Amino acid sequence: MRPRLTAVLLCVLPSLSFAAKDARCQGTPKARAARFSEQAMKGAPAAERYAAYVQACALDEVVELTKQLVRFQTVSSEVPAAKSPGIAAMGRFLQKWAKAHGLAYRTVGNNDVFELAWGEGAPHLGLVFHGDVVPAPAHEWKKPPFEPYVEGGRLYGRGVEDDKGPLAQALVALDFARQLGLKPQGRVLVIVGNGEESDWTGMTKYAASEPKATHVISVDSSYPVVAAQSGFVAWSLETPVGEPVKGAAATVRAVDVTGGEFLTQVPGAATLKLAPSAGRTPEQALADVQAAVAAEKGARATLQADVKRDGDTVVLTTHGKAVHASIADEGHNAMWDLAAVAARLPLEDNGISAMLRVVARRFDGDHFGQKLGVAYKDDGLMGPLISAPTVLRVADGKVTLGVNMRRPQGKDAVAFNASLDQAAALVGEDTGGRVKEAAGRYVGDAHVADTSGTLVTTLLDIYKRHRNVPDVKPGSVRGGTYARLFPKGVDFGPGFPGELYTGHAPDESISLESLDAGTRMLAEAVHTLAIAPQAPATPAPK
Image 1 (cartoon, rainbow, N blue to C red):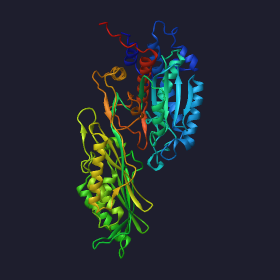
Image 2 (cartoon, helix red, strand yellow):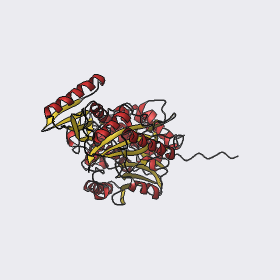
Image 3 (cartoon, helix red, strand yellow):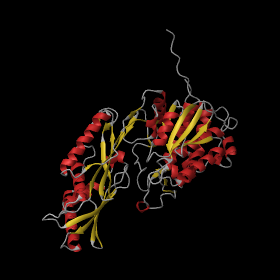
């Protein structure tokens, strides 16, 4: 067996990045690398020298490169890759970076994918990332989201965790190996898709048409190894706003409603604007809303709500905890609370009030689709389906509700689509046929990789030794990453167990300790899988 010198070094030595600056990291890259050469570290194998170099010197470069990448505003849901100045500028930056660091570069499609390559021959290792990011509404952030900064041992900015920090980790790890004169067996590809947060068309085409690497690692999820992903589901409901119908008891009318920012984030806030019914005053409407909030607080201790006058209207805002929709059960959906307060109000009947009734009856308090009748679970690796209403809007005379679900293996697409049909029928019955399913349903399948193959077992071994945990198993996430586009693809980081994932949240951040540890583990994976891969075992003669 090949000696595990890399592991010994990385698990035993202290992290120099958090102590005084290592003197060996000063000077030009050439001078720096020379201090970790065969001549400087006599008797040390290449794996050990590479590990020492990464541990001593990589973090500062990873942080700086991440900052440079974050400054490109690459929000693909606002401007798609083909038209995005930010994505185009980031491509030019990566092209220049690749040339300066001895890597090949090409753009695939209309800025759909940026590919950097190290080495020659057939692709052996693919490292997959996305360069686009989710929106970052400035009012939700303490500081400008595209002006990255370090504070309290953490790096802040949109994309530092999802996915520009991991991309920087990979680029620095490869560059350090190249500086030491190491060479991969076959090519190592750094594959950067630019529509992960919006439109996967370009990356899907790339994955289907380009030569497949032997091993594919995405760094877009969590540790130890994510070998399974839930299927992504986008489902929406709609109804005309219509003319309000004033019942005998109605005193207020809903005139607008807003909840959430985008499909893949649980709403951290939701707002309902109301006007007094005919013959009523704004002051009376304000009192009605305040009374409804007070009553709901008696039943819902977690309720956080603000009520204020805005001219002749009353604005009700509820506050929750925004998290990625794949971990909806770790957040708090502000839309639930808004619908619960609205249910206590004497509202005139219109499309807004009808949709809020749907939220209250079919979603409030339920993360798993039980009230909709779509719940099921995988008893093994993947667990239950997750369901979250995430975007509520009024536009063009319609009220729309976007719902994001993540579904495990265990039910095929035909059966699951049938359950969505039944859910739409239930909502229709609840509202007298007023609320219906909108166009654009999307039902994805779960992805499960080979958990006993070389890739998964190698990465688990690396994680066990770096984190000093003797028994870990591959896991599953409800999120969907580009790994699912590659038959054997898995995710390896960047999130560590027990750490809050902030990739889609305001004030996105990642600890410097996590950046450092992730870079060192990724570097070992590159060495083990691509620079010095073990040959497959030869079957014994029969």
